[in-house]
Image 1 (tube, one colour):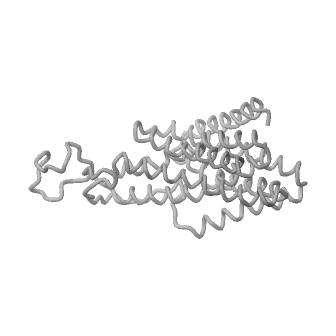
Image 2: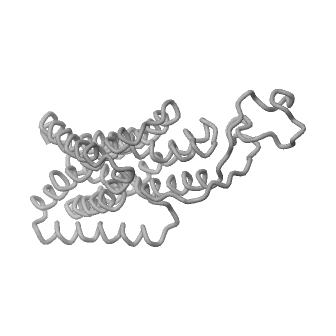
Image 3: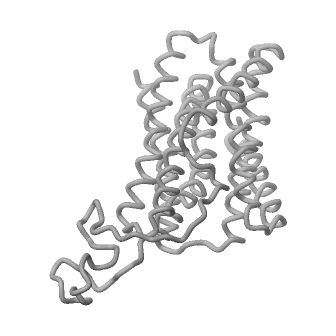
Amino acid sequence: MSAIVNIVLLSTAAGLGTGLGGLIAVIRRPGYRSFGLLMGFASGVMITLSFHELVAEAWAEGGWVLATIGFAAGAFVMFAIDLLTPHIRFAERENGTHSEPIETCVMTGEPVGRPPHRGHRRGHHPNWSHRYMPVNQKLLRTGMLMAIGISIHNMPEGIVVGAGYMHQPAFGIFIALAIALHNIPEGIATAMPLCMGGACTLDALRTTFLSGMVEPIGALLAALVLSSFQGLIPAALAFAGGVMVFLTLDELIPSAREHGHQHYTAIGIITGAVFVFVLSGTLGV
């Protein structure tokens, strides 16, 4: 039971990285170069973690056939989920500039759009603050669909943490730290269109936070299953590796390169890989 509790706590900490990214985005939205660097870093972390740790461990514990089948299964399962679920990839943007007002922030009741009637001038309506922001419903919808996509991604990331911890506690801690760093740029990518679309700060933060809290659900499911079926751990590690590689190649790297600055993306990928090597050496896993 203590192992399950630890897994849930670790995955929760990793999921909070998404909320931290949302906080960074609402405090100061990063420029395209910084965004490319951060998303490149996330890509380097995940693809290096997948091959250097997850698939390597599965290969050593279960053999090359199991590792190959598990890796392919993880990649194709995420491909199927990607096709069948309604979300927007990081690198996709909706066209159009039509903006529509919304009256209040869901969390606080703070008005974030234009006044509901032309006769209400700024400061004359008791429920309207001094800040008015034009609301772009397309950007808001983009942010929400991206949040759905990240929630879908965070479920298998939780499985990664659970499988890693069941294999070896230090290995689970290592994976949780790496995923937490990876989740920060994802939180930024979710919060940016929400903030640019006119959502209030608390709504953007709540959305990114809730997206990250899907991760402990996946971790709990993995812990419950693997605690009863220890022999599935190598397959689960390989499966998780396939999931991570697919997400990196399909979403993170295209997003990092979306606005150009390919050199910054490359630097980010290399830095992420170096981070995984250093963390692995430091923790001895």
